Amino acid sequence: MTGSASGPRTNETTPPRADRERPDGPDREIEQLRSELEMTRAALAAAEQELLELRDRRSVAMAELERKAYWLERAQIDPDAWMRRRSLFLAFKAFQMLRRLGRRRSGRAR
Image (cartoon, rainbow, N blue to C red):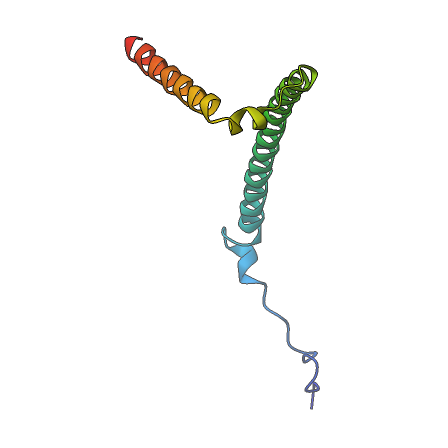
């Protein structure tokens, strides 16, 4: 016997791999993977940029809210206590409705 069951025979030569000879072999796969990697990197960069912009907008909104809360505390105004009064609550709702109506009219005039 010329070879064992666990290994290849010594007098046989292995044929060249067919995928190295084809144009769509490993080189093409590597190029596809590289282009996919570049697309993934671009998507990641876009997501990171969006995250930074979102964080900046959130920081600006939080700073505005903190500024308003500071002045309410300094003037010792408790908005919750004011809204518990029925007359002030109704006046606030009426003011909101007038404000919305004014915005709608000015939006149509533009």
